Each structure stands twice: as structure tokens, then as C-alpha cells.
Image 1: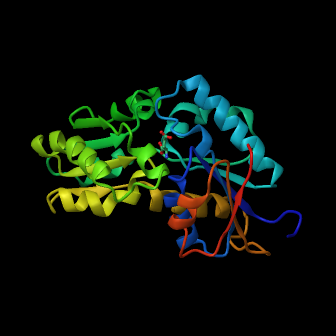
Image 2 (image 1 turned 120 degrees about the vertical axis):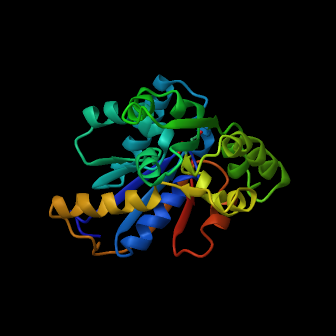
Length: 260
Ligand code: DGL
């Protein structure tokens, strides 16, 4: 690795940010990445804003020890609760992930949008402020209680998760939404299950591809290369890595369990 090589650092409360990492890696396959899964502290969704800010700072401090050149906060909960404070504190590009309500609204005919996100995201000032740009749109919101825990514990394809999803999307279907926004980076993992249990007329939207485009843009606007001279993908996790391994089984990455 050369001294000023471009390395993207990503973090999430756990495994959800892997959905963002996959989009970035698809778009920019020659870019080295370091991913931190703070699974020991997952979920962030029920935590207070102050707790989330403290955890985010700890995560960024760790990534900085690995010489990352930009940070992707691959977590809606962390972005909507902490990104302003993080950008004030740290002097490097910080890219966040927010629920994709704008593209959903622009594409919606019924102007009724379902939003599935964590409680902390739905209650954040940033999300509430974002909705104010669309006063005529009806947002049917649901906090995804327990979904992150099921994914973190490897129960993605369980009956329990499917039952919860049916419970969570039924009011959205009854309200005749034509788009459902997945406002948590863990949720794209169950996109295929969600498609099975909703009408084909409902579009399911997440933010992953938009974030990959944003990373590309930021690198270009800072005159940074999109190819790292030494290519690697390192995944750090502070809990058992079994589930992480299964989610990354087709990717060429190294996974490191460590105490953090
Ligand atoms: N992946 C996180 C997000 O995007 C999950 C939050 C949690 O840990 O509750 O919101």
C-alpha cells in the first residue's frame, strides 16, 4: 500500500452496511475498502442520539487508524442522528445513507409511500425535516422492530422474519402505497422476501446504488483515483463472524474478528 492510497472506510452497527459495500464494490471494483461492523453494539435503532454519536465517533477513530481517506456511514440510523456532528468533528469526506424518500416520491403515482426504518431514524430531526419537502405525500411509516437482530443472528430466511414483515407491510398495502422505502441498510437483504409478500405493483427502493454513485462523484470532485494501487477488502467485526462470512461468501474479502 502506498502512503496516500485511496481507501474507503465504511461502518455500520453491524452487517447491514454490507449491502452498501456490495453496491460500491460493483461500481468501483478497483477501490480498496475497510469495513467495520460494530455488531457487539447492534442494534443502534433503539439507542438515543447521544449514544449513537458516541458509537459513531469510536467507529471513525478506529477507521482512521487504518488510514482511510473517506468514510461511508453505511447506516441510516447513524447518518440521520449523527452526521452533522461527525462532519463538524472530522476533517475528511463523510458520506451518509438516508432513506430514499425523494426518488420514491418522484416516481410515485399514488403519492403514498411506505417507509420501513429503525425507530431512531423515523424519530430523527433529519428525516422529519426531509419529509417537509413533500407536504402532499402520505408517508406510511413502520419501525422495523427486531428485524436487525434477526439478520444479525443469521435468521434472514426464518419464518419469524417473514411473519414480522407481513405484519409491518400490511398497513402499507392497505393504504395503497406504490413504493416502499427500505430506510435501513440491513433491509435490502430481505428484498426478495418482501417482493414475495407484496403486490408486484409496489416498487421497493433502497439507497445503495445512489451511495455508490456519490462515492464515485466525491472521489472525482476531489481529483482522487478510483483505483487503489494495492487492492484489498478488510472486514473487521467485534463479534462472531459466522453470519458475516455467509453474507460475503461470494466476495473476495478478508474477515477479521477483534475485540473492540
Ligand atoms: N443498518 C442500520 C441502519 O441503516 C441498522 C440500525 C440498527 O442497528 O438498528 O439503520
